[in-house]
Image 1 (cartoon, rainbow over the protein chains, first blue to last red):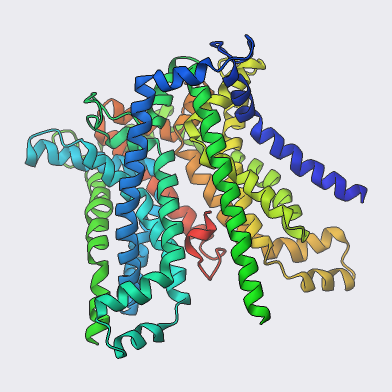
Image 2 (image 1 turned 90 degrees about the vertical axis):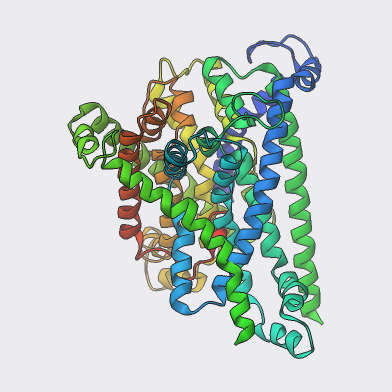
Length: 279
Length: 265
């Protein structure tokens, strides 16, 4: 019993330590000092400052726009790629698998640099103009996340009952209809988790954004600022700007709610499966 | 036959995309690594890299940082994953989620927070660059270790462990002869999640050591921001070579049934 308590103390101690920076930031988001460590009395001023800070709001908007668009594009490419590869011949499938694995094992900075080198070369020799724009950034983000969508859909394809698709065809569905009515619904859990993964990868990305970005979308600035690049530029010069502490607090609670929601949902669906099995 | 042909064709857009934006760019860095700025074949980048003590030092330092960080994360993450996976308590799954949850908060923000807290308690990167950087790396990569280890350990063969202790193994031998060999795939994929990303990390060493520690990622970033495409490309090629070597070394130990993305998340 003592031993068990000791084990769990270790686990919770490490857990606590990993949360210290976040908790400190959250605590000091409720006071209006420049540096963490100084407590100037409770205040919600930083939250007001956050919503009044134009550059933070633009960066946040950019981040969300890029995350959603790149997640939609990578989900489309990843899902169609996975379905197509699954029904290809063995040898072509192996080729596809390896190609898909390439950006997964490749360090992000190598992907980013290789894209930049290509765009610079094409810009200098063929197009004679600076190619860096929202589109190059989008390409970078799609490369980052599409392979993971593919990998999330693949196991669902393997688990799928192949005769259902054939049955749909036999019962008069066109292949297109069979795809949308029979296959896609069965793949939906994999597609959804791939989509969520694509969003989180894009939200968190710094290197690819910093390398491939071009002029901004929302405000016409020189380079698109996402949350990552904005924060990086700020913390290079000094401590985290006070209003970003408020942003951390908001992000933390949004994430917390989402995680609790997912946990409850998964528990429910597990219970449902159990109940069904007991019949 | 007609139908399967149509389903096959679905993958065409994705693989055109992969060829255009993954394969061809890699050919581009290969080209840039072995040419000079005028586009003629040259080994200048190669020679410049291997004769510069500065760059060799960065390479060795990055390798050391990666090895040490991988070991620290495994030493802390392994027992945690084992404890959480070994008891049946439903609550343990929630604890794993809690370990993973910081990953959803923007990592640049988290890195800045770590730096500010360390500065507050007097461990600032200006004076203690090594300690601060290792703390930052550990914070960032611990979840990546716990997740694959946890999912491997959920599948541990309990009967074999019991048999080992029934047949006279002491606790240490049970670990070395039964538990550890079973978890090797998890350890390998955990190490893969930490090793290369540590080497190529830019934000963490840059922020936490206040620019004092240069890892390979910082070095490539510097080449990028100074428009030195040839030398940056050559460093990227070295990085690719290290990836290939580590894949070859660990090839025999990774899990046979690839569950794809689930090993990462």
